[in-house]
Image (cartoon, rainbow, N blue to C red):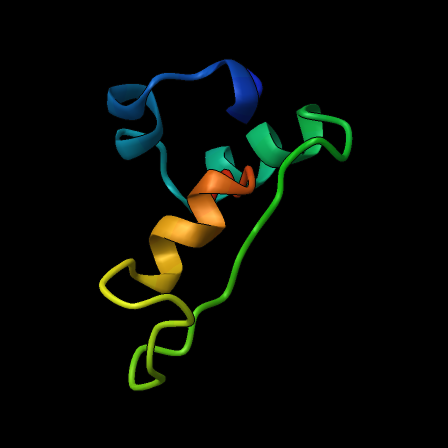
Length: 61
């Protein structure tokens, strides 16, 4: 199983739920998940909260 931090987008999209969990576990705590509340206003003007989370290193949003 490939670690999530080493996988590309097409590999991640082809994973089922169990494979994704194993991939995250194999990353040894190096995966950062960000939960965003969609109806909430963005913190900075026209930059979305998801873009801010990604800029700060979130692997999964």
